[in-house]
Length: 421
Image (cartoon, rainbow, N blue to C red):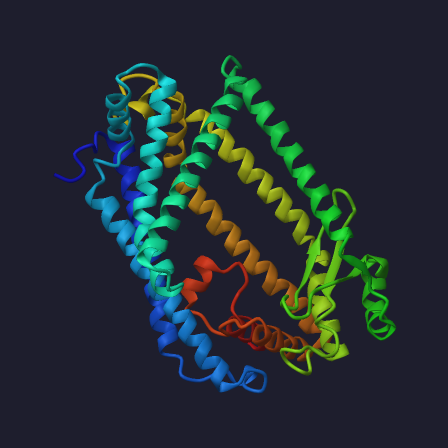
């Protein structure tokens, strides 16, 4: 009988939320698969830049990827629903105890991670077999060998990751909740600072100041009004034959290290388009990035990310309660690894909400930056976006649900509609 381990409202609510998200994700992928299937012609804005043959190939590839994802996710959802009791943490832990003979928590934890990894490998197997045997055209023996090798690597990685997590956690065992929270906040802030330094260090080796006088001349009136130095506009060196043209903003107000970066294959000729962006279109792209600076988007993003990381850690600590673990079938505080897994399960819905909020925020920042550029540069931004989407081999249109659920940047169709409305 399914779901016999639904012991109380905490467990039941968590399972219902988990399966609801699975089904919702399947529905959204199916909507996108149907939506793309109904697109028979290129958007007028990209017709000049994308040949019909390229569009048809792009449509076929996207439909194939979505179909594979749909089948793979359906398999995962079906198996996890049918074997919900067998895959429950308490079931896998009891099975691990049987393997190890209750010798020690360390051995049982290793067995539990082994079984958990086997479960994940089994759920991904149909997709992996398809990709290797059908798409890569490997023989049955080669496919089996590759999967066995991947399984062993996955086991080693998971065992190492869990043991490292338990080792780090052992330093905090005797700390009070308040002290532990302070330590986590300090750790998050430290890691954020380290990542900030690393990003700028990596960028430094690949960027140089933009020296194009024609572009800078058109930007100067706006830069002066924004009090943003032209010395903070950089050119990113790319391999023209491998990298898609791009522009981005890094840094924030806290360290006063904001930089606007544009790849060098946007300016002038581009082998994928023959006539990439005119100077005025390049200016419109840079104005979009300057819009992020003007509205302090990067600073707000850092604050939001820190809030999510700290609040998630706080909830993780608060969930260390007997009633929580009892709802998953444990009579007392469970072994360390199970305590972690159970609380991560309960955080699934919160993480989904946070992810959705971040997605909505990121999309709104793109709309705001588009509007900022459009009011100053007009239709040049629309032309530039159409060219970049064409070069990037992106579908210009997506189902609204799929776009909002999966894409932190709106589709070209959504962006142009927003600007022209």
